[in-house]
Every structure is written in structure tokens, then in C-alpha cells.
Length: 78
Image: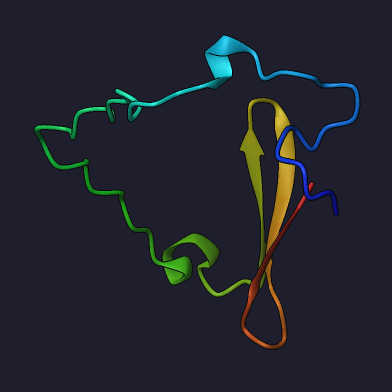
């Protein structure tokens, strides 16, 4: 480690002026929404499966398979 002050980047002799910031950023956060987000619709899996352990779902012309595993988890496959 060098005892001389200065840049630590090889080949860089001086920092560009735009990198020398002496004031805080004036970054503004996005405004908070004035209305709460809409509630998501909840569908019971029993209503979807109706006693079966596997169903087919068509989305934008593609068919997907949704099934209940032996452990009771859901798996979606294309």
C-alpha cells in the first residue's frame, strides 16, 4: 500500500470533475400511490380441481398441467 495520497486506479492520474461531489444527491423517490392496491381474487384449489389431482390450464394458446403432489403441494408444468 502506498503512503502517497491519490487515486488507487492504475493509469488514472486525476478524478474527473463530475465525480467530485460535495453535496448530497437530489434524488427523489417515486410518489406513494394515493389509493391502496386492488385485492387479488382468491380461488380455492378444491374449486379448481373438483376432486381430481390434476387439471389442464390453457393460457394464451399454451396448455399447462397443474397437479397436486403426494405431499399436497402444487406443481405447474408446461
